[in-house]
Length: 305
Image (cartoon, rainbow, N blue to C red; front, side, top):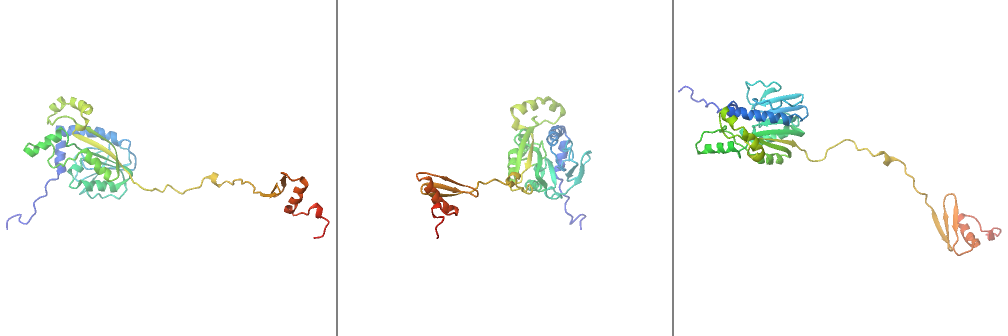
């Protein structure tokens, strides 16, 4: 029997390792600088109790966030010292080991484009987020100079970005978020430099960052988008209490009985009787009104019944 017979071949290197190698290159450090600056601004004013960064421990995406518990869930250990976040190792981003509705903020730098099931990753993020929780996503834009350069690898050219990445455009990411009832707040593009590999040429093309941000903002090589989880339906806001003014006693007008006798209107209330004479004489009207009051008329006062 040959040595090693019956043993399975070693598993292929995960695609995220290739991304880590790219981020150690000059163009990778250029991407990290842009993402660190804009992630600091995006998460600074998001409040809650628990903040989670998925993957890419090379960048401290929660550095400027002020939540009491901030940690990074990655699929490997990292040599980079993440000072403000605790590092947790997970096997698959498609099955996060966190309770439902327990996280207030999730940051995903380049996770969807290197995940085997990006839809399932988004569904897991939707599960662990609390209502009104927020998610921040960064990725490579396929409709950019770097995306065009990466497309030429199909013709035999050397890849500029990691070959394993399935780059997703920002409009498609927004569609996926809307299907999960997320409300997209804002999106931003950056990194407009061409696909060069040295620091010298990166510095020479720096002027394109200012020009691209003004004249062709949708052609940036990197994008970042922020969304809020919305939960539709009724919400119990507490016991319903009647307003105090509705419980106050209200005054009601006294009812009256009106009798019309030979042209005279007799209004009887609990204490008084008022008569108005129309065409009959005062004596006749009084004689007709007395039976209504329970008394005998003057003409028949002394006669037997």
